[in-house]
Length: 351
Image (cartoon, rainbow, N blue to C red; front, side):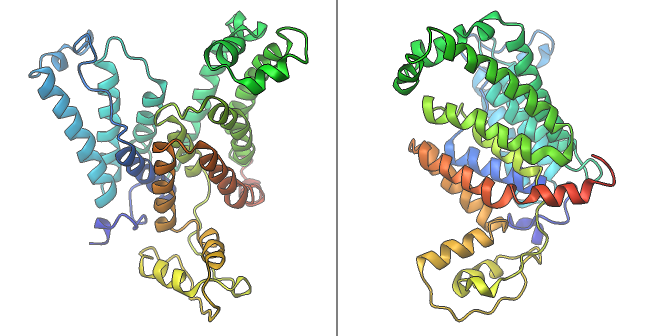
């Protein structure tokens, strides 16, 4: 019966880190209404290589089938032990929707679908390596496109993006200080260097934290300046990176911080993974104490899913500055301290 509980992440066919990642992503997709492309996007279904899919029922019936596959997969992900089967259903729904649309190209939806497919292909031996290599391929492919595009080396692409398309006033003011086109050229080359650096750092598990840091430097300015999350891409990226971190099997209470006994008691009631150590505190309750305790117990599944709800609300209502602050805070408080732990654990293997 514990497998019916979305807070229970142990005892699955994949690592708890992946269970948490795809569950958070599934909840986010439901809350934001980010569904796969349907079978008819203006040009009808288009399956030159898989003609059978183009002949199954009407477009409306086919769309309903894709939607049911998507929702059924999410149901299995959240409320059963069959995480891989559920992830396969969601991933296939995304890929099927994209392949069916002759005029649609969405890297955001393709990447999101691949996160689920990598989970479906993973097990306890591979861990989260498939997701890690998917991220490396993402940055390497994007970087190669830029390397062979003269406009990125000359700065024309950055000029078009920041000046012509989005008209970023702060950027135009900064660019006016330098010779014409200089800042755009430097930023274009900088993006190329950043992306290849991230891809290289992702190849070794010991340097994942530094890849995440460079990813923040690359992506968050785009979110702040252009007010874009690229559909589900940003949150899929965050959860993919998050799955590469170590999920603590035990959360010890630190009485020196005077944890909120009320919040700890609530999290203990939702602790179906044997994660929380006993904690006794008679300190007076306060919002600051709740915040401090929430940060201390951030890795609890209930806290992570609550943060997913918060992220979905911030995206839905366009509050991208608070969203950026939340992502930076989560990285600084939870991810960055893990760099020494990763180095210590992985040093004998050299990976």
